[in-house]
Structure formats: C-alpha cells, structure tokens
Image (cartoon, rainbow, N blue to C red):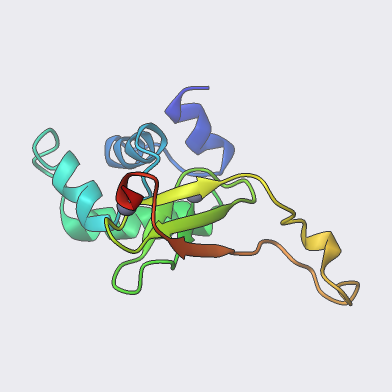
Length: 133
Ligand SMILES: [Zn+2]
Ligand SMILES: [Zn+2]
C-alpha cells in the first residue's frame, strides 16, 4: 500500500508533509523523536517547520496511524508499527528495539469485561547485544 492510501485509510488528508512524516516512520523503524524526524526531512522539504512535524505526529496518533512510546524519559518516541508489541531500551546506547514475542494480549487482563482496552505498553530495559561486548 502506498503512503497516500495508507493515510486515507486512517481518515487523514494526505498532504506532502504528512506523507513525508509517515513515510519516514515506516522506513525508519527506530522509534525516532520529533526532532529526528524534523532534522531528517527539513533539507528536502524547506517549508517544513517543527510545529508542522509536531502537529502531523499528533494527528497521525489521534487517527490511529502511529503510536507513541514513552520508554524514553526525555522524548516521546513515534512508531509506525501499531501492532501490539513490547519495546526494549538499551541503557548504554539508547537504542529502542521491538520485541514481538510474548503474551501481550489485553484479553488476558483480569476483570477486563468492564474495560474497553485499546492497547498496552510493555517496556524492557537492559543492554543490547552490541553493548554487552
Ligand atoms: Zn546498546
Ligand atoms: Zn515498536
């Protein structure tokens, strides 16, 4: 699916800026910060402002096209992978990686018949393979 159709699927009007932000997130699954996204895109889109990046990310999240991750104390991280998955943050190099295994099914939460659970966030911390050497 192309980025335009992807945004339309989530009810988002596909502007050049919005498509660029969405595309960057899909192609760079490193859970970037808003600053990282802005710094990467601004050379090719000179009209792009930081405010536009923030507003776009907010819109994408509100419409359910991306999810935010609060594993990093200093910065909100953005993830184009909206499936239920856990995250691991390396305490040394700071990289954030996806963990797709494990039981993250909200259906297994006790007493959840009164709650409508739409997601959950699971974080692990430690040292990545590279940093253990
Ligand atoms: Zn590391
Ligand atoms: Zn992720």
